[in-house]
Length: 93
Image: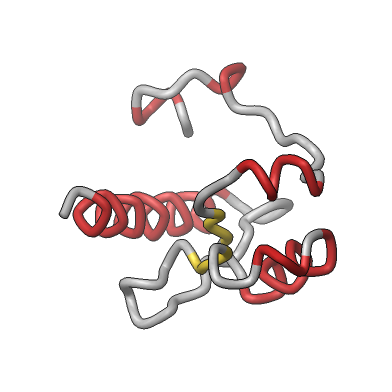
């Protein structure tokens, strides 16, 4: 599905989040509220810079489509794309 949207799958790889990565980041965007808690468990001092990707869509959570069919991935991609554009507009101000 990534290639359908001009992305190369081998360029995207999950990595383990570390406290160092959290401390070096200015902003951490996550898809689900439980991810906020997970980041804060690793680095409690990150409170305030860990936000939902869907913040500008009424704090919408975006469910991980892992192990679901293509329709779930298509839906998640659309929500992610919309949220990223909203963040880009906010950050450009």
